[in-house]
Length: 112
Length: 115
Image 1 (spheres, each protein chain N blue to C red):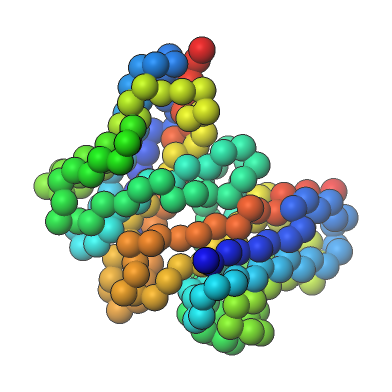
Image 2: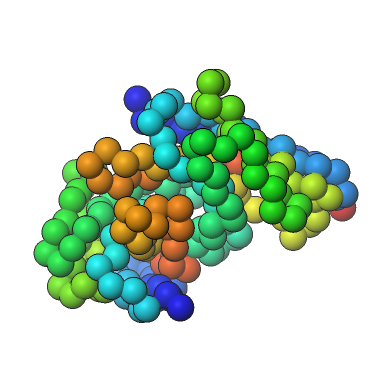
């Protein structure tokens, strides 16, 4: 299967950490990505992780990859109101071409 | 640097009218190009992708078509719009396989309302 699954909503208080989870089905995935979409805009690549890595940290963002369980997470430390957006998980695989599968997106609400 | 332009930003069209959305990429050559549709509050649906001039792959049979007349130009069209064509349309490009890690770069989107 080609599914990438995410929970649809997450609500956190400003200053708390947010953890957005994602599961994927294809074990041949090469890269996994997190994109952010603000209202009325296109998607913006936040970060990516190569499939042979377990963790990647970039300022307030931490990506964890569990290949055994096919589980990817994005942690946002000290969540701010400006982090309110839809976050998409995506996986890509090199199978004679280049195909990226996107999840349905998780809408993050940050309460002041 | 690479940029992607998509227009128009918003469009209101009557049922049965034609459609043409245009997307151009600058600063790169031979990009992979994509058209996605995003229904309200929902995820992305891949409509078409292209790996080269004149090469179009359709992911979902529908009322829409795509063309790539030039290397960095991707056009989404319809001869007769349906109400169900309403949505947020996104164009995107990606680099060749040796730069897969760069992911996709999306345009700012076109909000289409069919009335």
